[in-house]
Image (cartoon, rainbow, N blue to C red):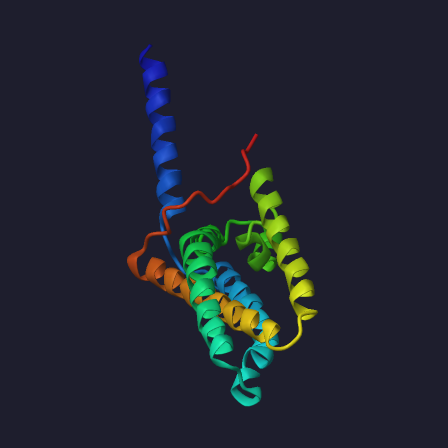
Length: 194
């Protein structure tokens, strides 16, 4: 019974050490690449839609159009930027990025942005959610591209706002984690190890 207690204490100690290691935040090459890669991915989305989003400034809009333009930006700032990115996606990305230390396999390091977005080495449900989200975005982009002016510009300003918020949220959460030495307190959705 004393051996069982000692073994139990060692395994609890090992679990505590592992949990501490997994919640510590240190910038590594892999974590920086993961966060910068995700940020560049989001920036590419902004870069693609910003020309259309700015069309109303030289093509003009009526009062209802300008009201819709501002409301679209506010709606996407809250729904996509704050709720989607700042509260959910960005903490997950940073949490997973901070797991990329030198002990991680080379493939995870090289594909760090995809790893951080949970496209692989994640629980099945998280991977399905990540792939469904990206496919849904591509589908919606395809639909929005077919909209005429000014409807597309009104939606694109919202998308620009949401994606920009997401870039900033991801970078700020990463910087705060490194400064405080603590990873975000979110489930990294790692698969169960055998």
